[in-house]
Amino acid sequence: MNNKFKVKFRGVRGSYPTPKANYLNFGGNTSCVEVMLDDRLVVLDAGTGIVDLGVELVREHILSSGNPQERKNIEATILLSHVHQDHIQGLQFFKPVFIQGSKINVFGLNINNEDLKDTLQDVLFDRVFPLGIDDVKCDFNIQNLNDSKVVVIQKCAEPKILELSSFNQNDYSKDDIIITFYKTQAHPKNGCLCMKISYNDKVLVYATDKESYVGSDKRFIEFAHGCDLLIHDAQYTHQDYVSPVAPKQGYGHSTYQMALESAKLSKAKRLLFFHYDPNYDDTTLEMLEKEFANPECGIEFAKEGLEIAI
Ligand SMILES: [Zn+2]
Ligand SMILES: [Zn+2]
Image 1: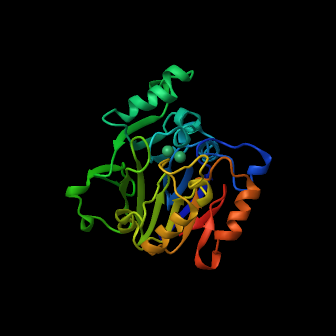
Image 2: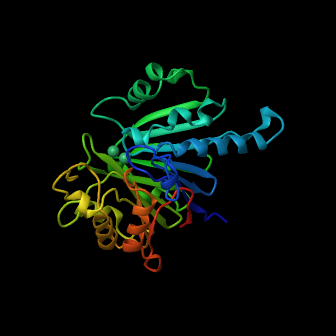
Image 3: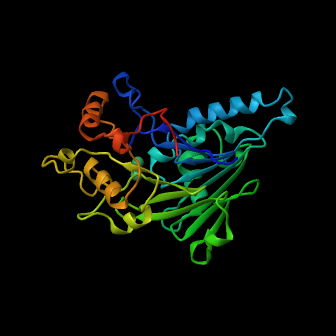
């Protein structure tokens, strides 16, 4: 029976990695969430958290057969919310990219009218890495994405990017993975894609690098309405957000209160705070956890390694 919808947090840190002892309870790797939908793998963002996922996938690939010709190929669809460093900086160290036979789809928000492949080539490969983007061994399928598109991943088929305007949900079954997008403009400079994954009547919404508005972000609330799990940016305390010395308004991130408001108004069944400020060590986040977490009401803090079944 098909019913597995599992989430594993591979990186929960915002901005830059924090590989220091007093940061590791919550985690030091930047944004990456592994989503396993039965046998299909979707990865949300490719921060440094994706590196360990790649190591595990290659290990499984090698163990799948003693004969290299008969090994099960690695297939993954990586969705990039945007191309800020903390969401892409693990991609060129994602080992399956260098394994012949791997099929790695990378779909992401492109900057202005630039091609995503050109951007990744420029900032991750060629000039700043020993290998060029065309030197990788996998089938590396890099495509532009925006909120006018829908991604559909059907069993035993290549993922498809379709136009939202002509998409008809009735053409698909609940065994098909349907991913839609909401673009928040409140993240400098080019916005960021929030993502909604629907599978088997369950819904996950991933909303990183998102700042709310006074009175909430109404279009986002509608987008996330009734989701089973909401993963929401929670970079700043309210005090830091409004700090008279270094205010964070306009940086494109939320406070804990904003994330809570989004969850409450969208009637999300479960909320996981995500994308922690790199200046917040475990002691700070444990204090925030005491203040804001309420597991009985489904309000928790994402931690690196945490697994959740939806
Ligand atoms: Zn970020
Ligand atoms: Zn960002």
